[in-house]
Length: 147
Image (cartoon, rainbow, N blue to C red; front, side, top):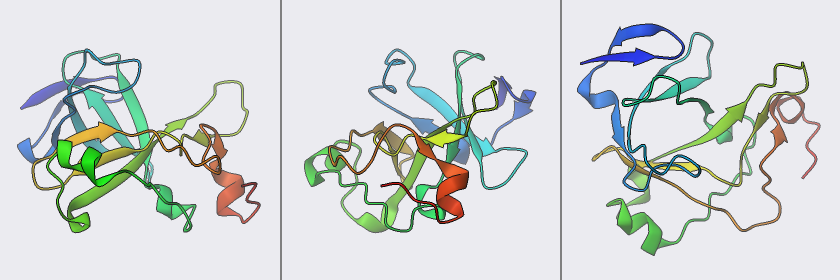
């Protein structure tokens, strides 16, 4: 399948890279079909809408810079995307890279939870006040964690 992407133009995507978000993502509820592929620079990924080239997100695995991260999502919510075992879960968070040179941040309050088997996903809301929408990734990698 070919997908027109914001980052790389027209690319070939394997069916295994397709992810369905039945409820979309917050603020983008009308877009449910996405593809996941490696970004040019590790450890980042692109989540690209299949239906709209301009809707794309940079993602990162939150455990790479916050070993203590806990995406506490209820079993009831996980069941909505067919997750019955925590072994089948992929967790990503959305990264913001401001053009003004301010720190690159990750939204640990709204993780993306993906069922690896069905490639169905959801965006959760974590109510724990420890997790904010803007965590400075580089600062936290270097150990300067601020909650």
